[in-house]
Image 1 (cartoon, rainbow, N blue to C red):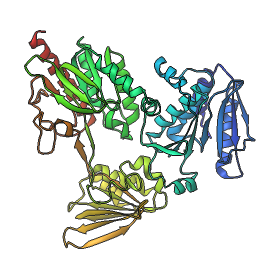
Image 2 (image 1 turned 180 degrees about the horizontal axis):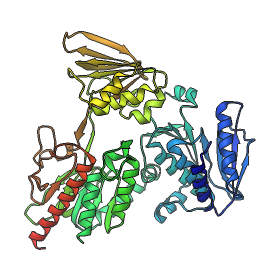
Image 3 (image 1 turned 90 degrees about the vertical axis):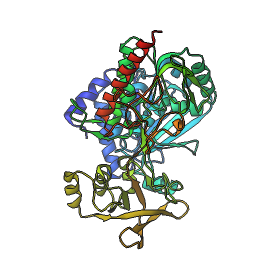
Image 4 (image 1 turned 180 degrees about the vertical axis):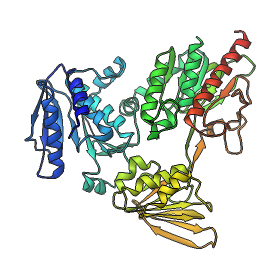
Length: 520
């Protein structure tokens, strides 16, 4: 089950165990149960602190629970074989159950331990989902720290009947006490904010009490992260605030064009950006969505950024790096069936459509890559392109053309997402050449038509382009003195991670130059 390299790595990790643990497996005669048993026996053989009991009686088979011998913790269960992206979740569950401390702040540990309500979480995942492990690991950590909390990871590809019954079409999907809790990537901090009702108010009070920053960076993707590192290195008081650290990079699976890094994954790069920021004296604030920007009344005054939570922060200069989000089709049915067949991440949600028919909207690189990936999972892919030709790189188009279960329809304008009230059943499109209307029966629609800048909150405050991007000059200056912008949210051409990083550094240096010239 595990190759020699993985075994060696896991053996090293298991040497960190300080307390004995027991793995209790619930198995049947299926092939997957035998795979799980093989994996668990291999883990048991790597440490004398690990024991295996294969006589569990959980209703989900195959599954296993990780227990701490002689000490009560919350239940941590894996229903399915946690390989792929979830292998790290398994390792962390073993280590933390065995007494190795989680990488969580003391404040968060106390917050988790202070939860007195019984919380029973279950998370439906796919092993190809890069966002799922963050949720699984956060909930496992909560269960290990608090006996009132339990968590079960469920592989949707193994428990398809359960997924179908619950009509789950997007992962990760989390249920709390049998009620839908959330979908998509969630950090431990985000989960705690939802279950600890007083946390949000406490955080607002804390933010409002902060002194003015020399530079406040709004947005923590590649551009914002680079800006924070550069300003902090200049020794000026720096704050960075965002809804989530890493931004849209968190949703990117494979990155192969970031210079000096041959290949990496979005979540890994986001984690490295965060670690780099934390190496400097930067005030990092998350889970805050910007609502309004109030420019200083006079040059050298304080700018104010207001947030949806009610928090307000002031700064001598501001760098806006709020990035962009997936562009929507804006057709009837899209919003109603989001996460019920309408999806935006083929890597995450593709396995849930195994053996079914799906469509991909968009013929650029992201659309063609999505169609290629999905073709290996689903029964048939229909790619719809608005224009007369695909816009993807030639090498991708060649690969697409070689796939027997992919159909490309050009000059197709999607007009409606069709559903039965609970899930997607098809889509309607217009042939732009003939104006003929057509319908396609399918189970999923993956939208890949580009990005929209996150600037709705800035309208009327700064100069924006007709596309809604922040207009900047060659030094990242905006139309307002003391306010700079960087990355995908701006008019800078080519929305690439490497360009966003450079623009963030440039905005930081321009901000520093501005502060020097203020002389205060």
